[in-house]
Image (tube, rainbow, N blue to C red; front, side, top):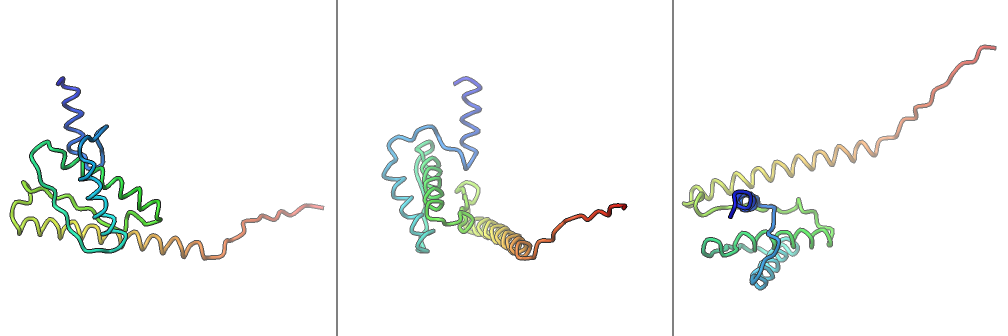
Length: 144
């Protein structure tokens, strides 16, 4: 690999929103995860998923593609993507139960604060829209 390709690969691997150009051999993993995610988000089923595999086996790519497909489904069914929370955890960083719990709690708290802030903004916008609009007409006096 040349330096430019290596930088592109590194950029892709560190971004949770980008997808590879193609994903081969993971169709069943993607469809299974999408089904589980849709059940969790759309039907409020209580499910948890953990993806395991060797380094470079496509774990992150499967998750990213599944989340993109979930987002598309939510938009088609008029479900607000902000109504659910995706938390990325890393076994190397969240190595023990205490650290993992702290990370999970911090992310859920951040999500709740963001949701509360969004609700307040929405309420303020609705209040503003319900107020009668003021007419801004000018009257001018003519000298006779």
